[in-house]
Image 1: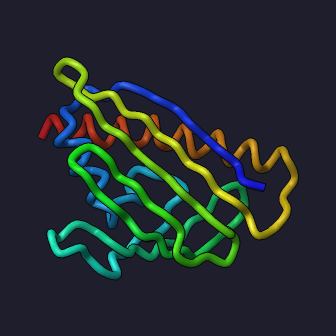
Image 2: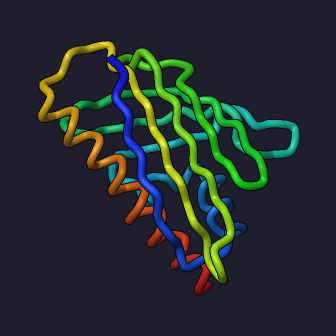
Length: 146
């Protein structure tokens, strides 16, 4: 059964900074508590990350994953390539200008290979949304001040 998480939020940083943070996938562990490691395996012709291997730990579940990214000027999309714990994963960040800052829409859909209690699934959804909102916001605003 697929599980969905969605949120939207504003960031006091321009879209270019938000996209820069998202493209810096190897720094994911700096602002996402669920990501323990991330390494670029391959890049697109333009130098943006394509396939990325990562170690993820959420709600007591540890997993090594490989995801494939697609980038546009204002979106970061990824899909699961390989995982021990997930059957599928699809995520999207959409970044639009909002005054001097940005508005971010975040969507994540995952399908687990293993059954977990509903309480753990809900906690995982909450963690994903909070990380997207708080972690990304803090990192973007920190970089915007540099």
